Amino acid sequence: MNIALVTGSAGLIGSESVAFFAEKFDLVIGIDNNLRSYFFGAEASTDWNRKGLEEKFSNYRHYKADIRSEEEIGKIFAEYGADIKLVVHTAAQPSHDWAAREPFTDFTVNANGTLVMLESTRKYCPEAVFIFTSTNKVYGDTPNYLPLVELETRWEIDQNHAYFEHGIDELMSIDHSKHSIFGASKVAADVMVQEYGRYFGMKTAVFRGGCLTGPNHSGAQLHGFLAYLMKCAITGNHYTIFGYKGKQVRDNIHSWDLVNMFWHFYQNPRPGEVYNAGGGRFSNCSMQEGITVCEEITGNKMNFSYADDNRSGDHIWYISDLSKFKAHYPDWTWKYDLKTTLTQMYDNISKRV
Image (tube, rainbow, N blue to C red; front, side):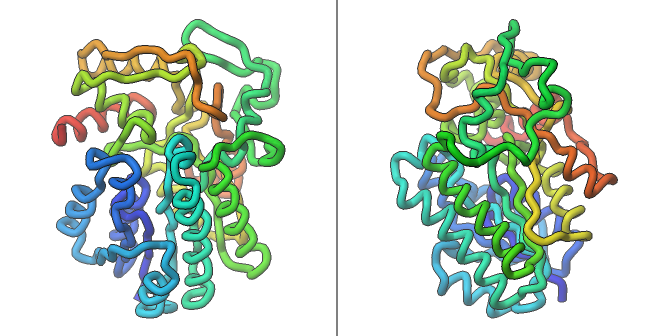
């Protein structure tokens, strides 16, 4: 039997992975204890998504286990053993604002939880491909020291800089910068995933995401930029822009496009690899530009205000360079651009609010 195991399976990337791999594996095991509702409140609960997966996919089996528990996770891995061919680890505490409230919780979920997953994979199914969703926050605030130029609706990098054409590549240093507590815990996990590939020879890959997005995102104020923006555009709820004149730039990759990257890697894996994963020059926007697109799609004028204080360590401009991944897997490319993604969000969120 071929089994795919997905952590954070009711979240954005986890649920997309379940749907994607349910058609390609005999069984998909999901692990998710809905900690997202603890992090961000009832409005961010992923229970609705879990129920949908269980109803739609007969070969999906859900476990409400805590990735920090060696005992709970070990039992699941022991039950299925070497039949597990793929592990997609997306479970995390994802907000750099929230992490500062409870650093121990943040670190144990992001770093210790990842170690538990790696060790369980090494012990019970060492030949499995292990995929980890990291973050561009591992680069800290280093991108903010690039030569940036202020334009009418966004910040942009100087057109003569090497990063102008494609964005930031994987060679940017992760040292000597302010990461946020969240970024630091993800660095620990990121490096450990690399090490299990390089030291133990396991087929591990780190995907350093920009803004991961899609119609199944349970967006909240502290996490889920586009999803929460669209939610506010639909409901009329107030939205606050924090700093940088609302011109800070994010690249946005649709959850399907990211999981399709996982699939390409699974078919031809490499040990200890690191890839930037985002919308690149194909799909990005500033806060101001995102608001404009949301207003166009909904037909509503957004209720927002501006706060001068930017979030500590927040990126002013970040666009991912995916050239390395595309060189390794030339058949992959993006499918969903920014407007298509936001339109899907509008259709989905409108049914839930």
